[in-house]
Length: 406
Image (tube, rainbow, N blue to C red; front, side):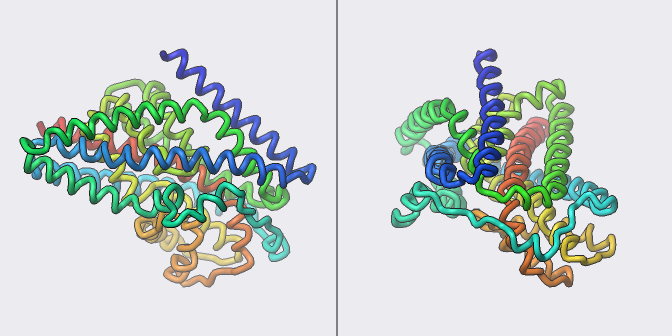
């Protein structure tokens, strides 16, 4: 079984590399239309299928988690521990982001962009799969999945509490929920088998759809986001290794699938079942992980903190603005507030940047918007990977806190 998992990881990495190569070739040769008509629809369909399976699975897992608790008091205890760990995780990545940003800015590793560069960007063309799904009333498969996660979570908690209060009368319903969860897990395993095709398509489209000359001017920003994400993953994994008393490498390898899928799909919602599975393999009990992971994903997303802070940094530096050191530190808490209020829609981080800059006393340079759009896909990859790592981190820590209390 372990050999099968290792083989699938290798295939996914190969698909990622081939996607980069094919995307660059299509970009250089000018055959971008192939990306929009072939690769983009495949990637969009796969992410939407993941979300389609993930939403009912999250609903069922939260109910199962609630019903496994002996009392309402235990549920409340689990919720506030999750909120506490989520805040700690967000502050941790905020401090790492602050340190890395100051290093990059101080050493001019962040490439400055001129107004002429800012006007050169490639707008994302909507592929026919997105067009088809978005015409469905209420966005059943697409936007509904992400925008209504909070509503689904609240309804699931309500059902779970009702079942705790009336255990004897709702036993048959609980058995049905467990059966549905089992079926959804099998569906998820089937979907994951097609991951290499989706990874290849998503990455190829990302590289083919962006102006390579623009991306070269933004390598500093991408490099900064990469360093932040990797640093956070290493620190979070180290803490997990200490808490679980396992080796650092073992914890990193166990968490890797969730991080990698988050990096490729850019959808932390779609990765929730896989993230929960990784937390379980680290010794976290299912009744804890199935509640903590969805809730942590609704709170201050670590990836949102990373993305917003990185994009604001580029906007400030590229616009020729200068800020005192205390404002860079203040940005940690400002960005955490933005990440909490940020809606789960594409490009959401870009939407909150003007508001954040206003609180810093800086005016947004509209010429930089195109650059932010062009590079956002890559920043979002690192941000989502960090969010998945953070969700695993929160689940493991909360479970250990509950054990310690016992």
